Length: 212
Image (cartoon, rainbow, N blue to C red; front, side, top):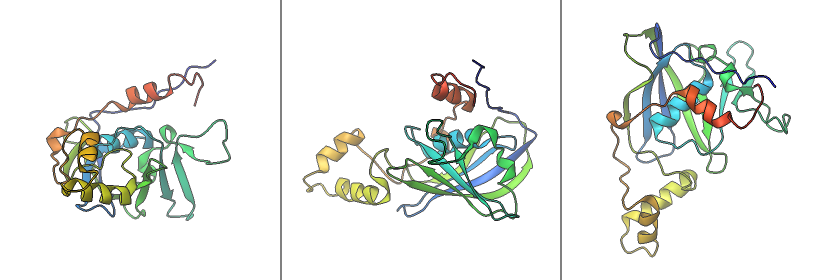
């Protein structure tokens, strides 16, 4: 049995990629602007998105990218070894973000939780020299991340409607479910802590016992 390879990670890179992350159809609009090492893989970017947005990484994810030259559409995520042909995709830890995040490329789609179906839009904004600090980092953003398992965009709209209506029969139940309170407008970049994507990867795949 071969050891499972670890994804590469750079915390103080020479170059950094700036990406705008939008969660369409949310009101107030949820968005983040992040800077990540140019050397990142799509797995590393996945972890950064989860942390910047405020998701808990409880569910599956998938990127959809379009090759600007061939127009081929590729999916990048976690391949299913048991049913490889059902949802074929490239292993995220094997694909560098620099291949698809640069000037002239179409926006990348990032789908999280195939049940709630949160589809984010990732827009490449800039690539430039890093300043010697630690990456990734979130430099701007707005609005709180929707709760996990709230039911997607439509479920989130309904959730906000209920918690704003003190007379709604589900008002107290929904607030208790979310921990007592929820303000969709609250977000600060200083509240974000980025995990080491290598450690997250090891946790996620420790029980697989296979090379990927």
